[in-house]
Length: 260
Length: 248
View 1 (cartoon, helix red, strand yellow):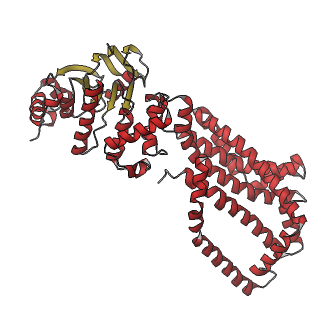
View 2: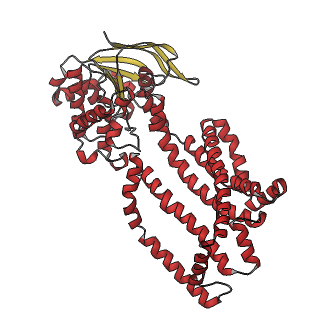
View 3: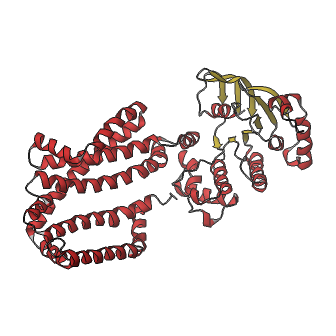
């Protein structure tokens, strides 16, 4: 509770530090507009037109339904990865044999292109929710698993000894010695896992389903409706930036204020 | 009578014998230092005495009511600020948090930390300040036996003296005992009732030196004279291999 109050207290200062980021985004939009003037409306619609389309889209019930569908798939996939990746990673980290054996499996999971997984999933599960969720899990699980594994593998033996010398009870050992260290590894892994899940869900939908934002993107492509395509991209990037910079980053800063 | 008694203690890591037949007794209120070259098994011996390592051969019987450990490198929890670091020993034994924090603040001030430092994380502390916190964390629990693993080795002479004084005070007021390892003979002479000389490969006690002079009366002259004397000792010369390093 105290912790969340501290996050809220530091939040305005954090937002204020965002002017640089906003300036860089505006610069990017300016370059985009230059691109529009050089290549024309069909190839690259102007930011203004894109944002107008976006505005219209956000007022349509149907678009929100599609966003809901995508959100559902991404959160189920990511949630399962988060749960199992963290738990299995922690367990694997505590046993030398398990971490050794899991490494090649992780390499396979990371090394295999998501597009190949989508093809396999389409054969296994058909066209639907399962295919998308499966692909999301396969893509984000290894990232979280490795983060949790690294966190437990790198626990500091010296601090454990210190804890033993003061006869820490088990809950103190966990909360004060193990948890902060593991969290400093696992939390960034959750963040990158989430980014991955959000990207993969769109890709899987584009190829394997007839609804969701990915499918909308496929329709926009077939109709050469570039403004709609760009508006969809803006929604995706905007939502990711919101989650990362407004929700996760302040938490991360607070949790890791002890780091240099 | 509270005491730590080590009998016929032998320890192996794998097939290497680290310690061989160690015997000594540390009584309440005494200070015993273990002196010897690096890699001679000093830390292993201290860990066995404090229960951080399990005894394999021989016995260590410790009936001191409480003990604390101050490590060479501080070993502060990097995610906790100064006060929260000092307080861990008190919380671990189940003290009430508000009282424990007040005690931690008091001892922090006594150990030369300032109120501005209380909220700092270890990354923002100098080496000396970390060591002050380390000592405060160990002494705030008012242990009857304190284990020290070369905690002075990286400190400047002023801070060393300051920490010596704090230790002496706790020894006197609370009748605290200390078992500490060092490779600084002068430190041993200044603080100890008894110095155990540990020779390496495998670690065994070759000689013990006893000092009767009350500690508060040991001035620099005493320490220098005794150091000069001890450096002439045949066993000291052999253990630290001083003869092979004769300066030309």
